[in-house]
Length: 143
Image (cartoon, rainbow, N blue to C red; front, side):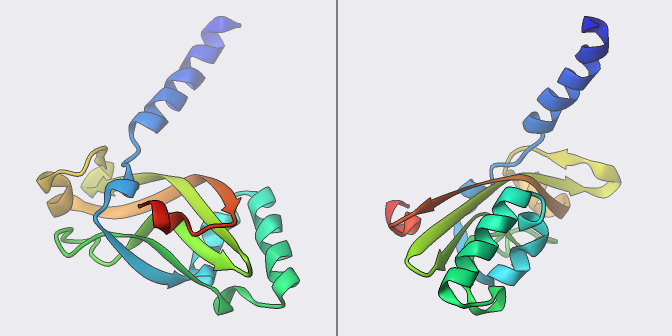
């Protein structure tokens, strides 16, 4: 039984080790909540919570503006792309969404840290495993 679980555990450990901490990106940029749909849809609980909050204030996703960290122009192929954390003001609450970011380059090469090489060669970002929290205060005030 233990031997079968080892490969699975190795995948879990490797997956988290291959994530880039996008919270360390040095710029922020705006985007619409509707642009986060594919990430939000990865969690039925998050999807339900967002839908409930929108119904409560009688708004649609495209009525809500958010901010996310942004890849600066130093990132050759990712310049302008947004990444978590995302912060959205929905009614009188603030939603902060974080995700595991995987930044890759040619032939699936994974970049785990922000380096000049990553900035030059990274071509794709994917986000999984969204986590979120609701607050009464703007999380940007603590940046």
